[in-house]
Amino acid sequence: MTYSIKVDNVSKKFRRYTDKRNTLKDKVLNLGKQIVKEDWILNNIDLEIEKGHAVGLIGRNGSGKSTLLKIMTKILYPDKGSLTVVGRVSSLLELGAGFHPEFTGIENIYMNASILGLSKKEIDSKLEEIVSFSELGDYINQPVRIYSSGMYMRLAFSVAISVDPEVLLIDEVLAVGDSAFQNKCIEKIKELKGKGKTIVIVTHDNSMVEKICDRAVWLQNGEITADGSPREVIMEYMGFLSEEENKRLIAVEDVSNNAGSSEGEISTVEVIETSDVEGSSNKRHGNKKVEILNVWFSDHLNKMKKNFNTGDTMNINIEYKVNQNCESVIFGVGFVTNDNIYCYGTNTHIDRSISIGQLQTEGTLQFRIDKLLLLPGVYNLDVAVHHENGEPYDYLTHAYSFQVSSEIKDVGIIRLEHSWEMKG
Image (cartoon, rainbow, N blue to C red; front, side, top):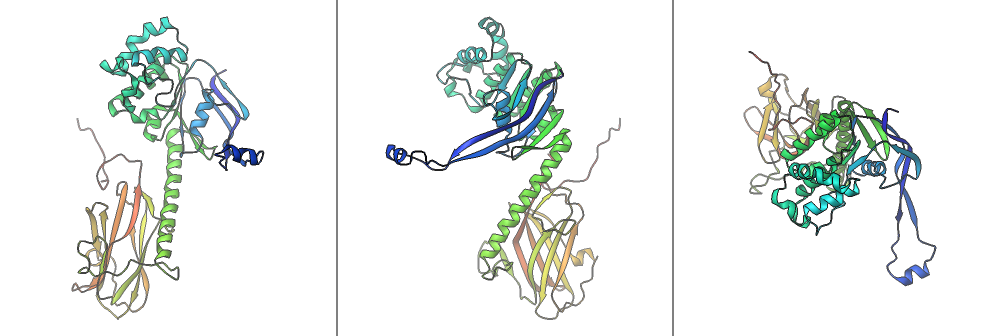
């Protein structure tokens, strides 16, 4: 037998009561009529985790990750299927679970470690090591009710690893610690993994999964969507999240546009002269000889998109209408952060890559970015059309926005293409 954990066709449901009976009269009069719905949180999960491997469970909130971990600890039991866990299990599921708020840190060490299976003699021998790892100092003799969430985590993690488990189960709690102690915990987890311990981690921190785990499992709606190398699964998961966020942003924009147009057409921002609103961040001005009707973003397939990843292709589509024949027309765009930092701006005159010539009808001009190098954040777009001599036809400031997501940990606004090389 090479596995430490075997989840065989496991399903788990929770009952949800849709009507509330607040009084005895309600319960008597409606006896037997209470409406109960069953929500299947896990559906036919098959998962085998080899001894000595570290596995990260990833997925959105409500996907079933924590429920699966609680089944592994036998806090919950499956409604269908079976579970086999080989060896002593230590779990870190919820902050303060197993702690008594009125007991001191020392007293809670003895109580919690005994629940995990250690004898008093074993706890005595490990006490100094537990206290030292927790770095709680004099607080170890204070009631834990005065502890911060980070201090709770320090004590809970210190106890959990002290039992020398064959299987260690962790559910997100490391997220509340300070970065120094988090790094210390990660190193300890790596040490346990090196000793052949099996580790399962539920986390939203994808970088932790890549640092620690041999394998990642993505749960979605109670089912396994992907199972494989951490990098591949995480990239697939991030792509899914990006597309979901893109759908949400488009839906929000559609609702906003429909609310602003009685005929349900895509509407632009309200025309506001700069002089009318002092300090307004959303302004429009110009004589409308050429009018910008709409601006929308799209991907490399020209599919509408509002959420991009760093490195994606982005198209900015500018729909315009000519109200008066014009020559020497210039279109321009500018990128601004949500806190009003100007990132980049250019126009057709500066680029000289396209000759607009004379405009007579409606049309669409596309500004293409082959590789979007903006770092994660929300950005606003300024769009303008004017005559070569500066005569403003239509200027829209902060009128359109898009979002950038990324797993890249660089800081700032834009990612510069670069490489590192040791020269001696």
